[in-house]
Image (cartoon, rainbow, N blue to C red):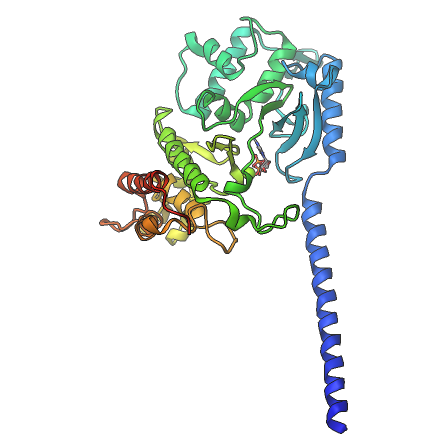
Length: 414
Ligand SMILES: Nc1ncnc2c1ncn2[C@@H]1O[C@H](COP(=O)(O)OP(=O)(O)O)[C@@H](O)[C@H]1O
Ligand SMILES: [Mg+2]
């Protein structure tokens, strides 16, 4: 009797503890959700941003080829905001039934430097003066030089400006147009995206309104960024995304990396490598959708070489690593890893924080061991000289050959 009573009390105690733990878990989940939500943009803020933009358009303060669609005919309709509160503005919208992305580094036009210089005149009165066309072109030239580290000859500044804002026709620009263009030209990501237009690995830019530009919608999707569980279909996505699609996306990453080395006179370094920053188009082409942390060689050297250090770990700039010169206590300006190493590590082998492996998880048995070796070599290149963590072009070719082999053979996926 006594024993039975004891076991019942113990069971009750167990239930009580379990209930307590569940409530605690629920409360902490709610707390984390609230914290995350508080860091994210709200629809209210984003709609207000667009309302202000359209008011400025109506008052002829901003312009752009897509202002009529956004503000007059309303064929571009706001759907959702995607950014963090303190970051740049990223909004999902619908344009004639197609999804598009609206982006701007800052919320308001006033957050950008104006082209109009304000100064006190001789009698102490504030005077504003917009630049003439020649001055504006000099400003553009300077802006492009800081971004691309190339000196644009005067003769081709007009052409380059045309490339940066292809929808702007005509050689002279009025003040409103200059002001809107100038806000766009202050956004490194815009310049980069515009510079790479025509390359299949960058989303198309359709145009702009004021300081916002409108680009192709290419989300990472299920192939690159699978959810653990799809509540709609009740299926596990991680296992259901098939090898062939993943192999094609990985192959696209490899051509993307080669393009980054050859498109410009200097290679482009990717320093923020994670699946959220890449989109996958319908034909499984990878596109760079966030290039805030992408730098051409000279700029990269400037960033890496400015840090003081006592060990190599002090010289890590996100996914761009360099080594510490212990005598000078300065980081080397030369990157010690490369894009391929970072992509292998963060995309092919592992996703940030997710336990089930990266894009190239569970390969077909026929290539499994060889791919595993190639990926290991890619993430941790065997280096004869000690410091370099650059994955070699031979490793790239090895991975490419194995992926192609797996696609050509009819080997069943594991
Ligand atoms: N062109 C695009 N197509 C689809 N989704 C996009 C695109 N650009 C951005 N996004 C979405 O918006 C999010 C935030 O945009 P991103 O440019 O990466 O901003 P952040 O610098 O804050 O990371 C991305 O993680 C992605 O989900
Ligand atoms: Mg991002």
